Structure formats: structure tokens, C-alpha cells
Length: 134
Image 1: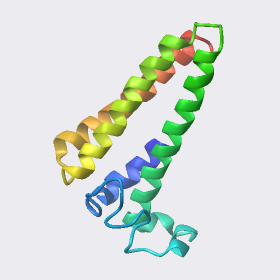
Image 2 (image 1 turned 135 degrees about the vertical axis):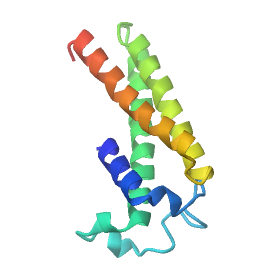
Image 3 (image 1 turned 120 degrees about the horizontal axis):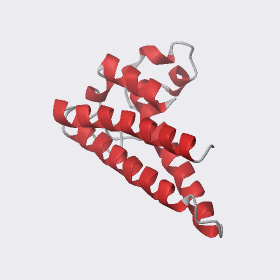
């Protein structure tokens, strides 16, 4: 889902709308939009809302990862520890690249690395899913 939203961000140049982090401008929710637009069927017509969704989905993914990490290390079965660490490193890199992309004004170098790393994350997850038969 995040990759799809990221494609919308890229295609709409939504990353150029707000070049601040962690806030979008001076507020958490984009100040050039109304919350009611977030609930509208045309939500993907608004670059600010699309960037907001992409950012917040990333926060959710990191939260879910931390939850999985906690239970992976709490469990006595150590088989998933190494893959979870590798996924975490690539996820951390993805977040850092996303922040650099925004703060740099969407410089092509950071934006390209952000997109390439997203493909690597999917590849890593696919390999681990096949290897561990998840």
C-alpha cells in the first residue's frame, strides 16, 4: 500500500509541496487543506493530502515493525531475529531517505535512492517470505 501511495506522491510531485519535517509547514495536518478533504472520494487529487497519507502510513509501518521486533526478541525462537534486523535496517534507511528527500526539496539523488530502496525492501521481504515459507 505504501508503495502505491509513494507512486502517487512521485507522480503528482507531492513531495515538493511541503519541504519540512516532521510538520507539514507549521502544522501536523497540511495547512492548505481541510480535514474534510481527507474523507472525500477525490482524496488522491490533492498533493498535500497524498503527502500526508504517505508520511503517516510510514509512521504506522514503523510502529508495526517495532511491535513485531518486540515480540520477535521476546520469543525464545531465534530463527526470525536476523531477518527482522535486516528488514529494520532497510526500513530505517527508507525513512531517513524519505526525510532527506523532503528536506532537500526533492533532489533527484535522494528521491531516486528512496524509490530504489523501496524496491529493495519488497525484494528483501519476498526473499525472506520464500526462504522461511511465511
